[in-house]
Image (tube, rainbow, N blue to C red; front, side, top):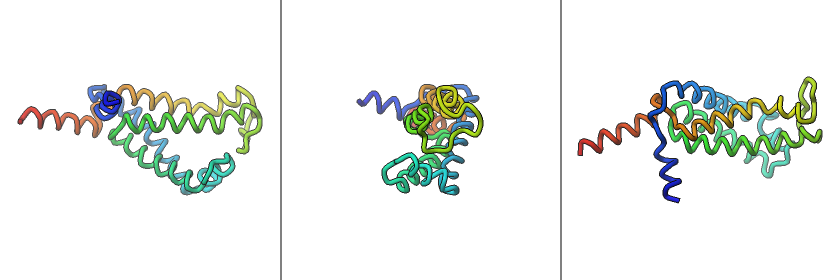
Length: 165
């Protein structure tokens, strides 16, 4: 268990600086989706109610807050592995709770505006951003935040400080 915890709290920080681009993409999307859940009821509480989540108001506000905070953490590259792991789990839950019903044609959410409306092709079309977010977070989980991150600054400052002692 200690190895797993160490793996999460000591991410690699020597990755290329271009990892920043992926952090900006994923962090930005989670940030604005979290804000939207507060601003538009149909994206937050209303959606969670239609999907049958227990305590939809509490759940929607928790998820929205986590997306805002986690999105900011990804943007700054702080606790990147922990946040990426949380978002992978969140996105898998989102896919399971929305896309299975879409496949079966029983979704309580509005169907896609254009054909296909149900079935595997509808799911593949509607899952595209979820898929991109999951894979981007998986990359960040494995590779860490890269050199242009607070994770890098904190790690390298600890190494410099420990060398002086």
